[in-house]
Image 1 (cartoon, rainbow over the protein chains, first blue to last red):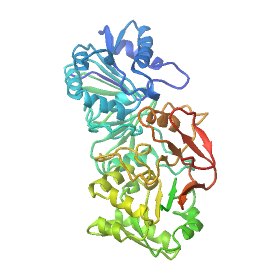
Image 2 (cartoon, chains in turn brown, cyan):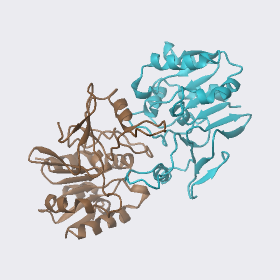
Image 3 (cartoon, each protein chain N blue to C red):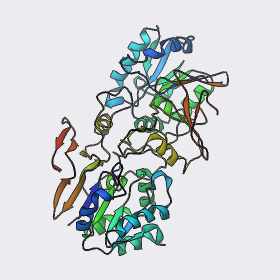
Image 4 (cartoon, chains in turn orange, cyan):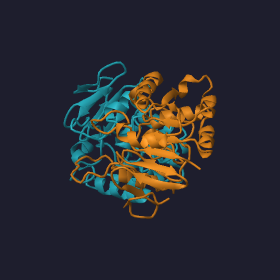
Length: 230
Length: 230
C-alpha cells in the first residue's frame, strides 16, 4: 500500500523551505526517524551536499534525521536501507538521468510499493508519474529514457499556472503544452498549483492545500476538481 | 556562406502570422520563388496540412509559393530540391525527433551551408543552434538525440522573458533555467525576446527588431547586448 505526499512546490513565496507543509510532514513521517533525501535535481546547480544541508535544516525542526543518497557509495543500498524517501525539486531531466544511470527506478518503485513513505516536491513529484513528460524544465541533459517511477497512474504538472488572460506574450501557455502532450500520449495529467499537494494512503488519493487541481484527459475539456479522479 | 533569419516568434500579440516581419521577408527571400516549409513542430497539435495552409496564406501576400516538406514521399528529396527553407514553431521535441528519424539534420545543414536561405520561428530558430537544450517546450515525445542543426555556434532561447520582479510564483525563471544548462554545457545562449530576430548574411550576424538580447556565457554574469557577440 503506497504512502505518498506529492507537493507542487517546496517553498511558498516569502516563506522558508517546506514551512507551509510542517504540520502535514509531522503526520506523514510520524513513524520515521531518518529520511533518505534524493538531491539529484540540484536546483540552480547547487551541489548535492549544499542541497542536503538545506533539507537537514528543515527537518531538524521536526526532529527527523536526513541522509543524502549521494553519500552512499552504492545508492541502491541507500534506497534499500531507507525508512522513507524525499526527492527534492530542481531539474527533472537531470534527476531522471541520474536515477536511470544508477539503475534506481525499479528499486525506488519497489520500496514504495512495499510501504515506505515517499515524498516529492516539484521535480520529485513529477517523477511519481509514469513519465517526466509534463515537466516544465529545460532539457539541460539527455536522460536515457523519460520513464519515471509510476507510483501513480497519471502525470503531474507542478507549479501549474493558469493562462494569463491579459498576457501579451506569444509563448505557449501550460494548457497548450499539455494539449500537445495529449496529441501523442494518453496518460491523464494533474495540473497542481503551488500550495497544493496530493496525499495517498490506504489506497486513497486526496488533494490537499488551498484549492482545486486542473485535470487534463484526452478528448475532454480541461476541468477543475476538488479531488484526484484517477 | 549561410543566410539565416532566426525569429523569436512567428506572431506578435494582436497581429497576424508573420506580419511584423513582412518587409524583412521581402528582402530575405527576394531571389526565391518557392519556400519549403517544415511543419513538423505542429503548434497545439495542428496537422501538417493545416499548418502549411497558414504559411501558404502568409507568403501569398509576398507572391511566394510554399510547399510543405510532409508532401514529399521522400523528405530528403524535398530538402535537396529546396530553394529556401522555413521551419515553423511549435514543439521542439517533436520537431527534433522527426528530423532525426527522417535523417534530415545533415541534409538541411549541408543545404544551408551551401547558401540557401534558412528561416526559423521559435522552435524553428531553436534548432539552428548546436542543441535544442535551451527550448522552453514540454518533452511530449522522446527524440533520439538533442543535437540540432548547428547553423550558429550558440544556442537560442526564443520567447525570452525577464524574471518578474513582482512574481510570487516559485517556478524557475528563464535565467535560472539557463544557469542550470550552463552547469553541464558550455555553449553560449542568446535569450531572444519576442519581436527580435537574428539576420546572418555574408559572414555577419545582426540582431534586429525592437531591442537588445540577453547573453548567457559560462562564468559570466548575464548581460544585454545590441549585437550577437559570437
